[in-house]
Length: 588
Image (spheres, rainbow, N blue to C red):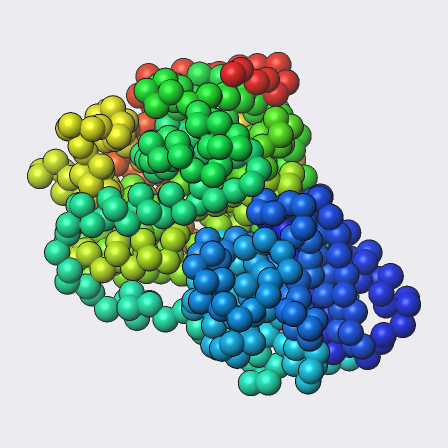
Protein backbone atom coordinates (compact mmCIF):
# COMPACT_ATOMS: atom_id res chain seq x y z
CA UNK A 1 0.00 0.00 0.00
CA UNK A 2 1.05 3.57 -0.62
CA UNK A 3 -0.05 6.86 0.91
CA UNK A 4 -1.59 9.62 -1.20
CA UNK A 5 -2.41 13.21 -0.28
CA UNK A 6 -3.84 15.84 -2.63
CA UNK A 7 -4.85 19.46 -2.12
CA UNK A 8 -6.92 20.70 -5.04
CA UNK A 9 -7.95 24.28 -5.76
CA UNK A 10 -6.51 25.92 -2.67
CA UNK A 11 -6.05 29.69 -2.49
CA UNK A 12 -2.38 29.48 -1.63
CA UNK A 13 0.45 28.43 -3.96
CA UNK A 14 3.25 29.79 -1.76
CA UNK A 15 6.37 27.95 -0.62
CA UNK A 16 4.88 27.83 2.88
CA UNK A 17 1.89 25.89 1.53
CA UNK A 18 4.18 23.44 -0.26
CA UNK A 19 6.07 22.89 2.98
CA UNK A 20 2.78 22.26 4.81
CA UNK A 21 1.68 19.69 2.21
CA UNK A 22 5.02 17.92 2.56
CA UNK A 23 4.63 17.95 6.33
CA UNK A 24 1.16 16.39 6.12
CA UNK A 25 2.33 13.86 3.55
CA UNK A 26 5.03 12.69 5.94
CA UNK A 27 2.25 11.61 8.32
CA UNK A 28 1.57 8.87 5.75
CA UNK A 29 5.18 7.77 5.30
CA UNK A 30 4.58 4.51 7.18
CA UNK A 31 2.34 3.45 4.27
CA UNK A 32 5.07 4.08 1.70
CA UNK A 33 8.60 4.05 3.11
CA UNK A 34 10.33 3.46 -0.25
CA UNK A 35 10.06 6.88 -1.93
CA UNK A 36 8.29 10.25 -1.75
CA UNK A 37 7.03 12.46 -4.55
CA UNK A 38 5.24 15.81 -4.80
CA UNK A 39 3.82 17.52 -7.89
CA UNK A 40 2.54 21.10 -7.85
CA UNK A 41 0.57 22.79 -10.62
CA UNK A 42 -0.61 26.23 -9.54
CA UNK A 43 -3.08 25.77 -6.70
CA UNK A 44 -3.06 21.94 -6.87
CA UNK A 45 -0.70 19.61 -5.01
CA UNK A 46 -0.40 15.83 -5.50
CA UNK A 47 1.89 13.97 -3.10
CA UNK A 48 2.78 10.30 -2.79
CA UNK A 49 4.51 7.98 -0.33
CA UNK A 50 5.46 4.83 -2.19
CA UNK A 51 5.52 1.19 -1.18
CA UNK A 52 7.19 -0.40 -4.22
CA UNK A 53 5.59 -3.74 -5.15
CA UNK A 54 5.54 -3.69 -8.98
CA UNK A 55 8.53 -2.26 -10.87
CA UNK A 56 10.37 -1.00 -7.77
CA UNK A 57 13.14 0.54 -9.87
CA UNK A 58 11.17 2.97 -12.04
CA UNK A 59 7.57 3.18 -10.83
CA UNK A 60 7.91 6.24 -8.61
CA UNK A 61 4.96 8.61 -8.44
CA UNK A 62 3.22 10.84 -9.35
CA UNK A 63 2.77 9.19 -12.76
CA UNK A 64 2.22 10.98 -16.09
CA UNK A 65 1.01 10.48 -19.64
CA UNK A 66 3.40 11.08 -22.57
CA UNK A 67 3.34 14.90 -22.53
CA UNK A 68 2.86 15.18 -18.75
CA UNK A 69 -0.48 16.96 -19.03
CA UNK A 70 -2.20 14.20 -17.03
CA UNK A 71 -0.86 13.61 -13.52
CA UNK A 72 -1.88 10.74 -11.24
CA UNK A 73 -1.11 9.74 -7.66
CA UNK A 74 -2.30 6.21 -6.86
CA UNK A 75 -2.50 3.80 -3.95
CA UNK A 76 -3.25 0.27 -5.07
CA UNK A 77 -2.68 -2.59 -7.50
CA UNK A 78 -4.18 -2.99 -10.98
CA UNK A 79 -4.11 -6.73 -11.69
CA UNK A 80 -5.16 -6.46 -15.35
CA UNK A 81 -2.66 -3.75 -16.26
CA UNK A 82 -0.89 -5.85 -18.91
CA UNK A 83 -4.18 -6.54 -20.69
CA UNK A 84 -5.08 -2.83 -20.52
CA UNK A 85 -1.67 -1.85 -21.96
CA UNK A 86 -2.23 -4.14 -24.93
CA UNK A 87 -5.51 -2.34 -25.61
CA UNK A 88 -3.64 0.97 -25.99
CA UNK A 89 -0.89 0.18 -28.54
CA UNK A 90 -0.43 3.82 -29.54
CA UNK A 91 0.51 4.92 -26.04
CA UNK A 92 4.04 5.09 -24.68
CA UNK A 93 4.31 4.08 -21.02
CA UNK A 94 7.00 5.67 -18.92
CA UNK A 95 7.29 2.87 -16.31
CA UNK A 96 6.43 -0.78 -15.74
CA UNK A 97 4.17 0.15 -12.84
CA UNK A 98 0.72 -1.44 -12.93
CA UNK A 99 -0.76 1.98 -12.08
CA UNK A 100 0.81 3.62 -15.16
CA UNK A 101 -2.27 2.68 -17.22
CA UNK A 102 -4.59 5.10 -15.38
CA UNK A 103 -3.46 8.33 -17.04
CA UNK A 104 -3.61 6.70 -20.49
CA UNK A 105 -7.06 5.21 -19.91
CA UNK A 106 -8.28 8.69 -19.03
CA UNK A 107 -6.89 10.00 -22.33
CA UNK A 108 -8.73 7.25 -24.21
CA UNK A 109 -12.04 7.13 -22.34
CA UNK A 110 -12.37 10.30 -20.28
CA UNK A 111 -13.86 9.84 -16.82
CA UNK A 112 -15.69 6.61 -17.72
CA UNK A 113 -12.77 4.18 -17.45
CA UNK A 114 -12.79 3.29 -13.75
CA UNK A 115 -14.89 0.13 -14.12
CA UNK A 116 -12.22 -1.20 -16.51
CA UNK A 117 -9.74 -1.43 -13.63
CA UNK A 118 -9.49 -4.85 -11.97
CA UNK A 119 -7.85 -4.33 -8.63
CA UNK A 120 -7.81 -2.30 -5.43
CA UNK A 121 -7.11 1.39 -5.74
CA UNK A 122 -7.55 4.97 -4.63
CA UNK A 123 -6.31 7.68 -6.94
CA UNK A 124 -6.36 11.38 -7.76
CA UNK A 125 -6.00 12.40 -11.41
CA UNK A 126 -5.27 16.01 -12.40
CA UNK A 127 -5.83 17.18 -15.97
CA UNK A 128 -3.54 20.23 -16.23
CA UNK A 129 -5.07 21.27 -19.57
CA UNK A 130 -8.15 22.63 -17.81
CA UNK A 131 -7.18 22.11 -14.16
CA UNK A 132 -9.98 19.59 -13.66
CA UNK A 133 -9.56 16.50 -11.50
CA UNK A 134 -11.19 13.20 -10.61
CA UNK A 135 -10.89 11.03 -7.51
CA UNK A 136 -11.91 7.38 -7.34
CA UNK A 137 -11.94 4.51 -4.86
CA UNK A 138 -12.17 0.77 -5.58
CA UNK A 139 -15.47 -1.08 -5.60
CA UNK A 140 -15.53 -2.37 -2.01
CA UNK A 141 -13.15 0.08 -0.32
CA UNK A 142 -10.17 -2.23 0.18
CA UNK A 143 -7.90 0.81 0.08
CA UNK A 144 -8.65 3.53 2.61
CA UNK A 145 -9.52 7.04 1.42
CA UNK A 146 -10.90 10.27 2.92
CA UNK A 147 -12.15 13.53 1.42
CA UNK A 148 -12.20 16.92 3.12
CA UNK A 149 -13.01 20.56 2.37
CA UNK A 150 -11.10 23.68 3.40
CA UNK A 151 -12.61 27.06 4.23
CA UNK A 152 -11.04 28.45 1.06
CA UNK A 153 -13.08 26.03 -1.07
CA UNK A 154 -10.24 23.55 -1.56
CA UNK A 155 -10.80 19.80 -1.80
CA UNK A 156 -8.46 17.55 0.16
CA UNK A 157 -7.88 13.83 -0.43
CA UNK A 158 -5.89 11.52 1.85
CA UNK A 159 -5.32 7.81 2.39
CA UNK A 160 -5.76 8.38 6.12
CA UNK A 161 -7.55 10.83 8.43
CA UNK A 162 -4.30 12.06 9.90
CA UNK A 163 -3.34 13.64 6.58
CA UNK A 164 -6.25 16.10 6.55
CA UNK A 165 -7.93 16.26 9.97
CA UNK A 166 -6.00 19.34 11.14
CA UNK A 167 -6.47 21.40 7.97
CA UNK A 168 -10.05 20.75 6.83
CA UNK A 169 -13.26 22.31 8.05
CA UNK A 170 -15.07 19.05 7.36
CA UNK A 171 -13.90 15.60 6.25
CA UNK A 172 -15.40 12.14 5.83
CA UNK A 173 -14.74 8.71 4.41
CA UNK A 174 -14.71 8.68 0.61
CA UNK A 175 -17.43 6.17 -0.36
CA UNK A 176 -16.29 2.94 -2.07
CA UNK A 177 -17.20 2.43 -5.71
CA UNK A 178 -17.57 6.18 -6.24
CA UNK A 179 -15.92 8.84 -8.36
CA UNK A 180 -15.63 12.54 -7.55
CA UNK A 181 -15.47 14.80 -10.59
CA UNK A 182 -14.67 18.51 -10.47
CA UNK A 183 -16.36 18.87 -13.87
CA UNK A 184 -19.56 17.14 -12.74
CA UNK A 185 -19.43 18.90 -9.38
CA UNK A 186 -19.73 15.96 -7.01
CA UNK A 187 -19.80 12.24 -6.32
CA UNK A 188 -21.41 9.49 -8.35
CA UNK A 189 -21.27 5.73 -8.07
CA UNK A 190 -19.32 3.96 -10.83
CA UNK A 191 -19.74 0.47 -9.32
CA UNK A 192 -23.23 -0.88 -10.02
CA UNK A 193 -23.28 -4.68 -9.73
CA UNK A 194 -26.56 -6.65 -9.81
CA UNK A 195 -26.38 -7.52 -6.10
CA UNK A 196 -26.21 -3.88 -5.00
CA UNK A 197 -30.00 -3.48 -5.24
CA UNK A 198 -30.39 -6.43 -2.84
CA UNK A 199 -32.77 -8.15 -5.26
CA UNK A 200 -32.89 -11.88 -4.50
CA UNK A 201 -30.79 -13.86 -7.06
CA UNK A 202 -31.89 -17.19 -8.47
CA UNK A 203 -28.82 -18.75 -10.13
CA UNK A 204 -28.44 -22.41 -9.08
CA UNK A 205 -25.34 -23.28 -7.07
CA UNK A 206 -22.51 -24.70 -9.21
CA UNK A 207 -19.52 -25.68 -7.04
CA UNK A 208 -17.12 -25.87 -10.00
CA UNK A 209 -17.98 -22.35 -11.20
CA UNK A 210 -17.48 -20.99 -7.67
CA UNK A 211 -14.19 -22.85 -7.26
CA UNK A 212 -12.75 -21.61 -10.55
CA UNK A 213 -13.79 -18.02 -9.83
CA UNK A 214 -11.98 -18.04 -6.51
CA UNK A 215 -8.90 -19.78 -7.86
CA UNK A 216 -8.65 -17.08 -10.54
CA UNK A 217 -9.00 -14.39 -7.88
CA UNK A 218 -6.07 -15.81 -5.91
CA UNK A 219 -3.87 -16.48 -8.94
CA UNK A 220 -4.09 -12.90 -10.24
CA UNK A 221 -2.89 -11.67 -6.83
CA UNK A 222 0.39 -13.56 -7.17
CA UNK A 223 1.56 -10.62 -9.33
CA UNK A 224 4.54 -9.16 -7.47
CA UNK A 225 8.17 -8.09 -7.83
CA UNK A 226 8.90 -8.35 -4.09
CA UNK A 227 8.90 -11.15 -1.44
CA UNK A 228 5.42 -12.13 -0.27
CA UNK A 229 3.42 -14.69 1.70
CA UNK A 230 -0.04 -15.53 3.01
CA UNK A 231 -1.73 -14.82 6.33
CA UNK A 232 -2.80 -18.20 7.69
CA UNK A 233 -5.06 -18.44 10.73
CA UNK A 234 -6.01 -22.06 10.13
CA UNK A 235 -9.63 -21.13 9.46
CA UNK A 236 -11.43 -21.95 6.24
CA UNK A 237 -10.84 -18.69 4.37
CA UNK A 238 -7.12 -18.16 4.93
CA UNK A 239 -6.46 -21.88 4.50
CA UNK A 240 -8.14 -21.91 1.07
CA UNK A 241 -6.13 -18.84 0.04
CA UNK A 242 -2.91 -20.58 1.14
CA UNK A 243 -3.86 -23.86 -0.55
CA UNK A 244 -4.59 -22.23 -3.92
CA UNK A 245 -1.50 -20.01 -3.75
CA UNK A 246 0.70 -23.01 -2.93
CA UNK A 247 -0.76 -24.99 -5.86
CA UNK A 248 -0.29 -22.26 -8.44
CA UNK A 249 2.87 -20.48 -7.31
CA UNK A 250 5.25 -22.67 -9.31
CA UNK A 251 5.76 -21.29 -12.81
CA UNK A 252 4.79 -17.73 -11.93
CA UNK A 253 7.14 -14.78 -12.27
CA UNK A 254 7.05 -14.44 -8.50
CA UNK A 255 8.33 -18.01 -8.09
CA UNK A 256 11.19 -17.36 -10.51
CA UNK A 257 12.31 -14.41 -8.40
CA UNK A 258 11.58 -15.60 -4.87
CA UNK A 259 11.23 -19.38 -5.01
CA UNK A 260 8.32 -21.77 -5.40
CA UNK A 261 7.79 -22.51 -1.70
CA UNK A 262 5.09 -20.34 -0.16
CA UNK A 263 5.65 -18.53 3.16
CA UNK A 264 2.79 -18.42 5.66
CA UNK A 265 2.31 -16.33 8.80
CA UNK A 266 0.14 -16.72 11.90
CA UNK A 267 -0.24 -14.86 15.19
CA UNK A 268 -1.80 -15.80 18.50
CA UNK A 269 -1.50 -16.19 22.24
CA UNK A 270 0.42 -19.27 23.31
CA UNK A 271 -1.87 -22.28 22.83
CA UNK A 272 -4.55 -20.39 20.89
CA UNK A 273 -6.93 -22.15 18.45
CA UNK A 274 -5.46 -20.39 15.41
CA UNK A 275 -1.84 -21.36 16.09
CA UNK A 276 -2.65 -25.04 16.30
CA UNK A 277 -4.87 -25.09 13.22
CA UNK A 278 -2.48 -22.93 11.16
CA UNK A 279 0.48 -25.18 11.93
CA UNK A 280 -1.50 -28.21 10.78
CA UNK A 281 -2.51 -26.52 7.52
CA UNK A 282 1.04 -25.30 6.90
CA UNK A 283 2.42 -28.80 7.38
CA UNK A 284 -0.22 -30.19 5.04
CA UNK A 285 0.55 -27.61 2.32
CA UNK A 286 4.32 -27.65 2.83
CA UNK A 287 4.67 -23.89 3.40
CA UNK A 288 7.56 -22.19 5.17
CA UNK A 289 5.55 -21.34 8.27
CA UNK A 290 6.25 -18.45 10.65
CA UNK A 291 4.41 -18.46 13.97
CA UNK A 292 4.29 -15.31 16.10
CA UNK A 293 3.27 -15.27 19.75
CA UNK A 294 2.11 -12.27 21.73
CA UNK A 295 0.85 -11.83 25.28
CA UNK A 296 -2.22 -9.99 26.45
CA UNK A 297 0.08 -7.32 27.88
CA UNK A 298 1.86 -6.92 24.52
CA UNK A 299 -1.50 -6.23 22.93
CA UNK A 300 -2.63 -3.82 25.64
CA UNK A 301 0.65 -1.91 25.35
CA UNK A 302 0.05 -1.50 21.60
CA UNK A 303 -3.55 -0.26 21.83
CA UNK A 304 -2.72 3.45 21.54
CA UNK A 305 -0.53 2.88 18.48
CA UNK A 306 -3.24 0.70 16.96
CA UNK A 307 -5.97 3.32 17.39
CA UNK A 308 -3.69 6.04 15.98
CA UNK A 309 -3.05 3.96 12.87
CA UNK A 310 -6.46 2.39 12.20
CA UNK A 311 -8.35 5.59 13.08
CA UNK A 312 -11.45 4.09 14.65
CA UNK A 313 -12.99 3.49 18.07
CA UNK A 314 -15.07 0.51 16.92
CA UNK A 315 -14.58 -2.25 19.49
CA UNK A 316 -14.40 -5.31 17.26
CA UNK A 317 -12.06 -3.58 14.79
CA UNK A 318 -9.61 -2.65 17.55
CA UNK A 319 -9.76 -6.14 19.06
CA UNK A 320 -8.87 -7.75 15.74
CA UNK A 321 -6.46 -5.06 14.53
CA UNK A 322 -4.08 -5.36 17.46
CA UNK A 323 -2.74 -8.88 16.79
CA UNK A 324 -2.67 -8.09 13.06
CA UNK A 325 -0.70 -4.90 13.78
CA UNK A 326 1.85 -6.84 15.87
CA UNK A 327 2.13 -9.59 13.27
CA UNK A 328 2.62 -7.12 10.42
CA UNK A 329 5.63 -5.60 12.13
CA UNK A 330 7.26 -9.02 12.43
CA UNK A 331 6.44 -9.94 8.84
CA UNK A 332 8.00 -6.72 7.54
CA UNK A 333 11.12 -7.38 9.63
CA UNK A 334 11.61 -10.59 7.63
CA UNK A 335 11.83 -8.59 4.39
CA UNK A 336 8.30 -9.43 3.19
CA UNK A 337 6.31 -6.56 1.61
CA UNK A 338 3.05 -8.17 0.50
CA UNK A 339 0.65 -10.72 1.98
CA UNK A 340 -2.56 -12.32 0.72
CA UNK A 341 -5.39 -12.51 3.26
CA UNK A 342 -8.87 -14.00 3.65
CA UNK A 343 -11.10 -10.99 4.48
CA UNK A 344 -14.56 -10.76 2.91
CA UNK A 345 -15.69 -14.37 2.81
CA UNK A 346 -17.93 -14.14 5.88
CA UNK A 347 -19.78 -11.17 4.45
CA UNK A 348 -20.33 -12.82 1.05
CA UNK A 349 -21.36 -16.25 2.32
CA UNK A 350 -22.97 -15.40 5.66
CA UNK A 351 -20.14 -16.97 7.63
CA UNK A 352 -20.65 -15.18 10.93
CA UNK A 353 -22.31 -17.39 13.49
CA UNK A 354 -25.35 -15.16 13.89
CA UNK A 355 -26.38 -16.15 10.35
CA UNK A 356 -27.55 -19.44 11.93
CA UNK A 357 -30.61 -17.48 13.04
CA UNK A 358 -31.49 -15.95 9.65
CA UNK A 359 -35.26 -16.52 9.33
CA UNK A 360 -35.37 -16.93 5.54
CA UNK A 361 -33.26 -16.58 2.41
CA UNK A 362 -34.47 -13.05 1.74
CA UNK A 363 -33.23 -11.81 5.13
CA UNK A 364 -30.04 -13.83 4.71
CA UNK A 365 -29.24 -12.24 1.34
CA UNK A 366 -30.10 -8.72 2.43
CA UNK A 367 -27.80 -9.04 5.42
CA UNK A 368 -24.89 -10.23 3.23
CA UNK A 369 -25.44 -7.20 0.99
CA UNK A 370 -25.44 -4.87 3.99
CA UNK A 371 -22.27 -6.47 5.31
CA UNK A 372 -20.38 -6.15 2.01
CA UNK A 373 -21.39 -2.50 1.68
CA UNK A 374 -20.03 -1.81 5.17
CA UNK A 375 -16.73 -3.68 4.77
CA UNK A 376 -14.76 -0.49 4.18
CA UNK A 377 -15.62 0.63 7.72
CA UNK A 378 -14.58 -2.62 9.38
CA UNK A 379 -12.51 -5.51 8.00
CA UNK A 380 -11.11 -3.65 4.98
CA UNK A 381 -10.11 -0.76 7.23
CA UNK A 382 -8.45 -3.20 9.65
CA UNK A 383 -6.60 -5.19 7.00
CA UNK A 384 -5.45 -2.09 5.14
CA UNK A 385 -4.30 0.07 8.03
CA UNK A 386 -2.94 -2.63 10.37
CA UNK A 387 -0.57 -3.79 7.65
CA UNK A 388 0.15 -0.36 6.13
CA UNK A 389 1.29 0.85 9.54
CA UNK A 390 4.48 -1.10 8.86
CA UNK A 391 4.75 -0.70 5.08
CA UNK A 392 3.14 -4.05 4.31
CA UNK A 393 0.49 -4.57 1.61
CA UNK A 394 -2.52 -6.87 2.12
CA UNK A 395 -4.42 -8.31 -0.86
CA UNK A 396 -7.88 -9.85 -0.47
CA UNK A 397 -9.01 -12.26 -3.23
CA UNK A 398 -12.48 -12.82 -1.74
CA UNK A 399 -13.22 -9.19 -2.66
CA UNK A 400 -12.33 -9.67 -6.31
CA UNK A 401 -15.07 -8.02 -8.40
CA UNK A 402 -15.61 -11.03 -10.66
CA UNK A 403 -15.69 -13.46 -7.75
CA UNK A 404 -18.22 -11.34 -5.84
CA UNK A 405 -20.47 -11.28 -8.91
CA UNK A 406 -20.37 -15.08 -9.11
CA UNK A 407 -20.88 -15.65 -5.38
CA UNK A 408 -23.63 -13.07 -4.96
CA UNK A 409 -25.61 -14.41 -7.92
CA UNK A 410 -26.17 -17.77 -6.18
CA UNK A 411 -29.69 -18.38 -4.92
CA UNK A 412 -29.28 -17.63 -1.17
CA UNK A 413 -31.30 -20.72 -0.31
CA UNK A 414 -28.03 -22.60 -0.92
CA UNK A 415 -26.17 -20.39 1.55
CA UNK A 416 -28.70 -20.88 4.36
CA UNK A 417 -27.32 -22.74 7.39
CA UNK A 418 -29.22 -26.01 7.86
CA UNK A 419 -27.59 -28.28 10.48
CA UNK A 420 -30.22 -30.98 9.96
CA UNK A 421 -28.92 -31.32 6.38
CA UNK A 422 -25.26 -31.13 7.41
CA UNK A 423 -24.92 -27.57 6.07
CA UNK A 424 -22.91 -25.36 8.40
CA UNK A 425 -21.93 -21.74 7.75
CA UNK A 426 -20.26 -21.16 4.34
CA UNK A 427 -21.27 -24.65 3.22
CA UNK A 428 -21.32 -23.66 -0.47
CA UNK A 429 -17.68 -22.54 -0.27
CA UNK A 430 -16.59 -25.60 1.69
CA UNK A 431 -18.37 -27.94 -0.72
CA UNK A 432 -16.79 -26.24 -3.74
CA UNK A 433 -13.33 -27.17 -2.46
CA UNK A 434 -14.23 -30.61 -1.09
CA UNK A 435 -12.23 -32.55 -3.71
CA UNK A 436 -11.72 -36.22 -2.84
CA UNK A 437 -9.16 -36.89 -5.60
CA UNK A 438 -7.02 -33.79 -5.13
CA UNK A 439 -7.93 -32.42 -1.68
CA UNK A 440 -7.23 -28.79 -1.01
CA UNK A 441 -7.34 -29.15 2.78
CA UNK A 442 -7.85 -31.79 5.49
CA UNK A 443 -11.57 -32.41 6.03
CA UNK A 444 -11.67 -31.15 9.61
CA UNK A 445 -10.04 -27.88 8.56
CA UNK A 446 -12.36 -27.54 5.58
CA UNK A 447 -15.30 -27.88 7.97
CA UNK A 448 -13.87 -26.03 11.01
CA UNK A 449 -16.35 -23.73 12.77
CA UNK A 450 -15.99 -20.03 12.14
CA UNK A 451 -13.68 -18.18 14.56
CA UNK A 452 -13.53 -14.40 14.38
CA UNK A 453 -9.90 -13.28 14.21
CA UNK A 454 -10.07 -11.54 17.61
CA UNK A 455 -11.34 -14.81 19.14
CA UNK A 456 -9.11 -17.22 17.25
CA UNK A 457 -5.86 -15.59 18.38
CA UNK A 458 -6.81 -16.69 21.91
CA UNK A 459 -10.03 -16.31 23.90
CA UNK A 460 -8.19 -14.67 26.81
CA UNK A 461 -7.26 -11.75 24.50
CA UNK A 462 -10.74 -10.23 24.56
CA UNK A 463 -11.24 -11.14 28.21
CA UNK A 464 -7.94 -9.42 29.04
CA UNK A 465 -8.98 -6.26 27.19
CA UNK A 466 -12.22 -6.10 29.14
CA UNK A 467 -10.35 -6.55 32.41
CA UNK A 468 -7.90 -3.79 31.50
CA UNK A 469 -10.71 -1.38 30.63
CA UNK A 470 -12.42 -2.24 33.92
CA UNK A 471 -9.35 -0.91 35.73
CA UNK A 472 -9.24 2.39 33.81
CA UNK A 473 -12.90 3.33 33.37
CA UNK A 474 -14.97 3.88 36.50
CA UNK A 475 -18.70 3.40 37.02
CA UNK A 476 -19.00 7.16 37.48
CA UNK A 477 -17.45 7.76 34.05
CA UNK A 478 -19.97 5.39 32.50
CA UNK A 479 -22.88 7.24 34.16
CA UNK A 480 -21.88 10.41 32.30
CA UNK A 481 -20.95 8.73 29.03
CA UNK A 482 -23.94 10.13 27.13
CA UNK A 483 -22.94 13.67 28.07
CA UNK A 484 -19.25 13.26 27.28
CA UNK A 485 -19.83 11.32 24.06
CA UNK A 486 -23.35 12.13 22.80
CA UNK A 487 -22.59 10.62 19.37
CA UNK A 488 -22.11 6.83 19.34
CA UNK A 489 -22.19 6.79 23.15
CA UNK A 490 -20.02 3.92 24.45
CA UNK A 491 -22.10 1.35 26.32
CA UNK A 492 -19.24 -0.68 27.81
CA UNK A 493 -16.07 0.24 29.67
CA UNK A 494 -13.99 -1.26 26.88
CA UNK A 495 -15.68 0.98 24.30
CA UNK A 496 -15.27 4.03 26.59
CA UNK A 497 -11.55 3.29 26.99
CA UNK A 498 -11.00 3.14 23.22
CA UNK A 499 -13.07 6.29 22.68
CA UNK A 500 -10.92 8.31 25.08
CA UNK A 501 -7.79 7.36 23.17
CA UNK A 502 -9.37 8.07 19.78
CA UNK A 503 -10.60 11.52 20.82
CA UNK A 504 -7.14 12.43 22.03
CA UNK A 505 -5.67 11.73 18.58
CA UNK A 506 -8.64 12.92 16.52
CA UNK A 507 -10.68 15.50 18.47
CA UNK A 508 -12.62 16.92 15.50
CA UNK A 509 -16.34 16.25 15.16
CA UNK A 510 -15.81 15.01 11.60
CA UNK A 511 -13.46 12.36 12.97
CA UNK A 512 -15.96 10.94 15.44
CA UNK A 513 -18.67 10.99 12.75
CA UNK A 514 -16.44 8.92 10.44
CA UNK A 515 -16.75 5.86 12.71
CA UNK A 516 -19.85 3.66 12.39
CA UNK A 517 -22.00 2.86 15.40
CA UNK A 518 -25.07 0.87 16.33
CA UNK A 519 -25.79 -2.33 18.23
CA UNK A 520 -24.13 -5.57 17.14
CA UNK A 521 -23.92 -9.18 18.25
CA UNK A 522 -21.16 -11.40 16.84
CA UNK A 523 -20.42 -8.76 14.16
CA UNK A 524 -24.03 -8.44 12.96
CA UNK A 525 -25.64 -5.31 11.64
CA UNK A 526 -28.22 -3.67 13.88
CA UNK A 527 -30.99 -5.05 11.65
CA UNK A 528 -29.97 -8.68 12.21
CA UNK A 529 -30.33 -8.39 15.99
CA UNK A 530 -34.07 -8.68 15.35
CA UNK A 531 -33.54 -12.33 14.36
CA UNK A 532 -33.23 -13.48 18.01
CA UNK A 533 -34.85 -11.71 20.96
CA UNK A 534 -32.17 -12.93 23.40
CA UNK A 535 -29.40 -11.12 21.51
CA UNK A 536 -30.57 -7.66 22.53
CA UNK A 537 -29.42 -8.52 26.07
CA UNK A 538 -26.05 -9.85 24.95
CA UNK A 539 -24.63 -7.17 22.65
CA UNK A 540 -20.97 -7.98 22.04
CA UNK A 541 -19.17 -8.20 18.69
CA UNK A 542 -17.29 -11.37 19.65
CA UNK A 543 -18.37 -14.59 17.93
CA UNK A 544 -18.80 -16.08 21.40
CA UNK A 545 -21.77 -13.76 21.88
CA UNK A 546 -23.73 -15.97 19.48
CA UNK A 547 -25.27 -17.93 22.33
CA UNK A 548 -26.40 -21.39 21.39
CA UNK A 549 -24.20 -21.40 18.27
CA UNK A 550 -20.51 -20.96 19.19
CA UNK A 551 -18.94 -24.08 20.71
CA UNK A 552 -17.29 -21.89 23.39
CA UNK A 553 -20.07 -19.36 23.90
CA UNK A 554 -19.85 -16.93 26.83
CA UNK A 555 -20.92 -18.16 30.22
CA UNK A 556 -21.99 -15.79 32.96
CA UNK A 557 -18.65 -14.19 33.76
CA UNK A 558 -17.29 -13.48 37.24
CA UNK A 559 -15.63 -10.19 38.04
CA UNK A 560 -11.90 -10.02 37.49
CA UNK A 561 -9.73 -8.90 40.40
CA UNK A 562 -6.79 -7.68 38.32
CA UNK A 563 -5.68 -7.16 34.74
CA UNK A 564 -3.41 -10.23 34.67
CA UNK A 565 -6.30 -12.68 34.76
CA UNK A 566 -8.55 -13.66 31.90
CA UNK A 567 -12.24 -14.21 32.66
CA UNK A 568 -14.11 -17.48 32.61
CA UNK A 569 -15.41 -19.15 29.47
CA UNK A 570 -16.99 -22.54 29.13
CA UNK A 571 -16.27 -25.79 27.29
CA UNK A 572 -13.00 -26.91 28.84
CA UNK A 573 -11.28 -23.52 28.63
CA UNK A 574 -9.30 -22.81 31.81
CA UNK A 575 -11.36 -20.79 34.26
CA UNK A 576 -8.64 -18.29 35.16
CA UNK A 577 -5.59 -17.92 32.96
CA UNK A 578 -2.48 -16.12 34.10
CA UNK A 579 -1.06 -13.77 31.51
CA UNK A 580 2.44 -14.92 30.55
CA UNK A 581 5.40 -12.59 30.74
CA UNK A 582 5.53 -9.88 28.11
CA UNK A 583 7.49 -10.53 24.93
CA UNK A 584 6.66 -11.06 21.28
CA UNK A 585 8.37 -14.22 20.06
CA UNK A 586 8.80 -15.85 16.69
CA UNK A 587 9.05 -19.51 15.76
CA UNK A 588 9.68 -20.64 12.18
